[in-house]
Image 1 (cartoon, chains in turn red, yellow):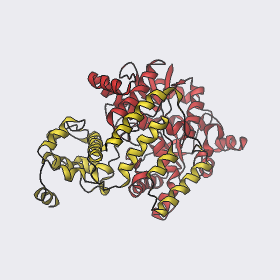
Image 2 (tube, rainbow over the protein chains, first blue to last red):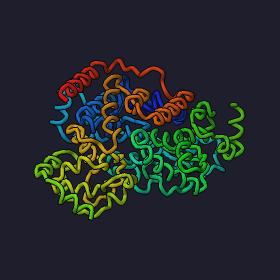
Image 3 (cartoon, rainbow over the protein chains, first blue to last red):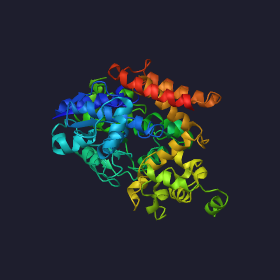
Length: 301
Length: 194
């Protein structure tokens, strides 16, 4: 099946490049056809644009939806913020025809609310491809790896807006982890907010919110955290040293994108999965992942 | 009884509730039963001066100035923990976004100084390139007098650069140039009127 691929800004040319690299690598193996939407623009990023100018935010998102329609009936994104923003714009433009006309007139740009369903890449993996198909491609079971799954917010909330899993107790990531042969660790705060863009405007709050997640993962004995959102991954990984400086103790927990973990299990090399771009060193985690993983890593050194 | 004092010392604006009811997130605020599940579920409550429940209570009393000057509206990160559990199905994050918008339009000084700057800067970067370019956003949001903060962000920028995670050039989307021109002219008109 072909999907209209909306990378989003951080995934395509910024902090989460390794998410795209690893996504494209596992998509190739699983036969997921992703066609990038030509000329896509920023989705409006939750309320970054909306709080400044709501109609501008609808024009930005709506333009992408219309461009996607030409490619597929499914627009798929890797980013939870894009997933939410596009889903919300679609609902608003679909439910209010006069609003849609107002946006089109104001910005002289055709927008759409119909004809295309907004999907998160994890939804495609677990529901369109399926766990058993994923399991078939596992070459290197991650037997000894203890993985804590962290969802963040907008991939599961608000309920009823594109969500495909339980808003309070989602299970899809854990099931994916188990099907990759790894051990799934229960993370109590798996849907609690990491602080998101507060890292720019109110870092103190973000540091404490992220600390809680890292602390719980550490207490649960996780070798790594796996996540699905570029901003969650950024706060947990790139900002981990800031959190450590704040609390005065070391976490040293690697934070991988779901697609990076999957790629490891599929036997792809660390470089093919952009693992050199993660901040927290992966060395000890990879050594813990079992002999076969060590062999793959060493072979590509 | 912090809340009662606020009400006693304020001059209510009776039209405020009606204004709020008209925008997304405000439609159902008269349904709020003041149960407090929103504040109890909020992961950022510790940094807010009032809980979302209290903000809704103040809106219903027409306390416009108080509402628009809370830190609550700026701290909300739109995580939707509140709405997921709200027994009345109130979309609190989008209510907060619209209150942010009102506060910016009415130039109410924000308790979190960087927040209005962030929203304006974000829009400026997007209307210029069509996509986000983080270095420019950071430079626009940074407080130039806060040397420690500047150093902190510069070191983050350096670490990102070493990983190849920050582009040296901003992104270019040629296909969207006409659309971006409209975005720019609309926003420039708005700024000229301010």
